[in-house]
Length: 445
Image (cartoon, rainbow, N blue to C red):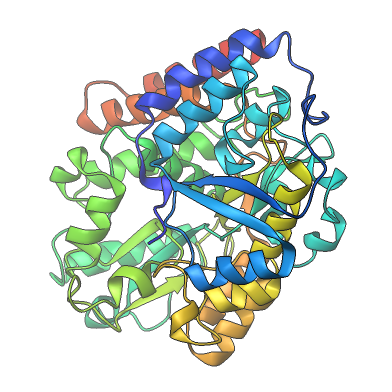
């Protein structure tokens, strides 16, 4: 099973950001060299791989060892604990692993602190760009900090049966149409609360706001980390207002004030209690909605290009990546592993194109566009044509890389939007509070 970080809370990560900021001033930057004593050996060595995921089939690792002479020791750790270990080892300049996690949200931080080696030194990064649309989420100042090993991006999901019961046969492409369709579903009594928004004070609420901001045609931060959402006419402000209005106007269940993203997926969308989630996770049709043991809506859920202002908007990326810590013992061998793990042939195996015994996890969606397209053509990926099209145009949440202070910012986002949804503060005050945090952090970085 692949354990997705994108649904974890950030309580541990907020503390890590403070540690990271303390050492920013003495950082070597994103371009760096391997630690003194690192070996260039690429055979007859054992590398340690630490990721928030179960290992791939042992037969695959054994074949890698047979082909390269590199043995692999795999460690599965939950995302928060893994970030603690990465940060502790980096600040102490001690060895932790040869390959480990580089999450999209921390690529900016890890790169600017010089904690990971620039992979373009070890791999042909240019050759990956055309087939890995999400590589940009791990690129900072021209340096590739990590390689996405699976693809994850925000998508809109709709229950087509519930839309049809309300007399809606053409799927919405704009936010106005989308909102009107949800009102029609409610007014016709198809479901009482047609929209799922996870308003619990957790990372999923921040992610939902980012995608909604994209839907309204805007961005969150500029290249210097300054907020782009404080003006009432901005997309981010409109997105926050739309989300809060949705719960106040009865499109979102009142109980969602304390529901996080995974709970909403499991108890609302998967049970036919909600007709749509504007910002959902790619791959959930295969891994949840079409799984009859945990869902009552098998065959009813469809991916929808996220509605925008005048037509479909781009989808925002939140992929998992892997990179080489600066203190790695065997960086050259680690690079060979990353190259193998993310090759088209290996991803085809992990996705099940070459037999069920080679599959890696039920929720794995390859980071290579060519492999996703093969899955879609083979009919092995539910609504795969939509997924492939959206992966092709998926964009990073922060085009210039997530800021080093992202965990602090995300905490401000979900805390204040949650408060606005409960009615304890206005949308204007919530946006101001979020903007103040971004302005202060950008000024300190």
